[in-house]
Image (cartoon, rainbow, N blue to C red):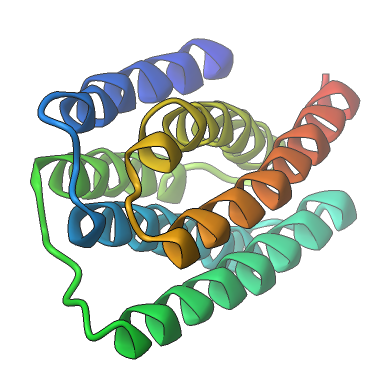
Amino acid sequence: MFARTALVAALALVPALAVAQAPKPTDPQIAHIAYTAGKIDVDAAKLALKKSHNREVLTFAREMERDHTAVNNKALALVKKLNVTPEDNATSQSLVTAATAKQKELSGLKGAAFDKAYIDNEVAYHKTVNGALQDTLIPSAQNGELKALLQTGLKLFQSHQAHAEQIDGELH
């Protein structure tokens, strides 16, 4: 059931990220999408740090909070340096809507059920966001520094996905 819920959550993000494909997102929109996606994962990690008692899940959540905060701080510094204002858009808004629903669902769970649902969601979320970075956001970025930051983030987030998949296998 929880795997299905994670799949549904991931599929709910696909239309949101598909919006970014046509028309091609601008750099200010890309910056907002990337920042929003990172903030969503920081918020999910904070929830896991409050609710979980599983050592592996807690270690992972601390990693998500640390890494996504660091990347978002670099993104904020870059947009300030470039004097660019991130632009809210339909993709960012859809991400927030889906994340709000997922946070509500996760908040109602406890113990092993929470751990499994959180990790399942992290696997699905990273797959979706990594795909969007690779297929849409990085190719659409015009600014070289923004593109480089997104590429660095993608490598890091691919390692997050692998880590979440490894924990997911242990929770079965």
